[in-house]
Length: 358
Ligand code: NDP
Image (cartoon, rainbow, N blue to C red; front, side, top):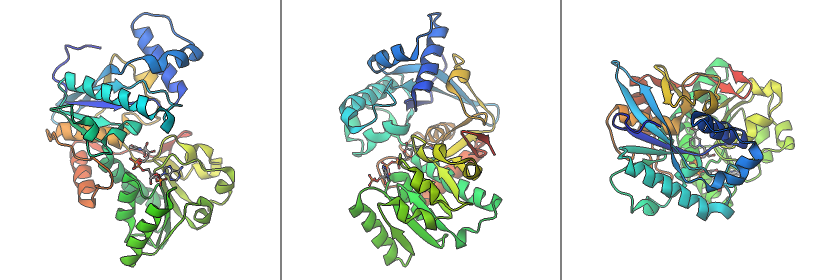
């Protein structure tokens, strides 16, 4: 990586979704250094021992022929070790990655995927890291999810006002924002999460506002009624649940890993998409050019809303912790960041899933 690159506006901290992606990234790094490639079994043995580090520079083109510069910091957290058993070890790695970002003098840092967990306690675990703004990027993710549902419903001629919307992970940071956004727009809300108490509390509050909803920890009680589904949890959906889906259901899967979209039969995949994704109309470049190894989306310059949020804030020179904590995403925030993104040519991505774009 070229460390003499111009001032770094933003950093993205992340981890890989599966071993195939890990292998592609590790071998691209080794190729770049002129070292021989490793087989996946060897990579699995060593991967978790690699300390977090900057892996490539990112140049994002902006309006008026300007660009912003960032860096991707890989945590080297193994994709099959995201469970509570490895929590302590993973937190240490995320904090190490945050320290890397601080040393680079980065103005704003997005904590992508699992890594946003360190912000859950109101930044307490980051109190020793100064002069940087760390954020989840969930406001732009939630905004892209809601915009995606509006657009997909219009395309498929489904009336949102006559529809029942199921939110899987409804009590979470992104899920609760989607619930707020759609609460007065859909016919009925169907709410799902694992912890019954929190779920019931959410349903009770909505009912107090005379919003029609049903909450259940059992997906099979909700799926048959759903016309539209937003998945914002790493929820495994079993084959029995899949059989209960309506034939024309629209599914926005924004959770990781992608348990729902991946398990759908072909006729349902045509109405389902990876949610929370945006793309930069003006494009971006990686140095070294790991694009081929690292970038696997069928849509050029597509990226996660959570990562794009830092890029948008950098473009606007608004170095602030826009999205932090849990449950603090307001509709106003979603609209503000979405408008800022649009102004900078960052918009909702065309729809795609593992089968390609549609
Ligand atoms: P939170 O931890 O705030 O919320 C997770 C929600 O999912 C909670 O309601 C949780 O409730 C529920 N949940 C977790 N596991 C299950 C399960 N097995 N079945 C049903 N519900 C479940 O996370 P965020 O809102 O920050 O993120 C949600 C998802 O979105 C994650 O998978 C994350 O990786 C992904 N994400 C996607 C982005 C994108 O750009 N596409 C950007 C950022 C995040 P309970 O614990 O009660 O089950």
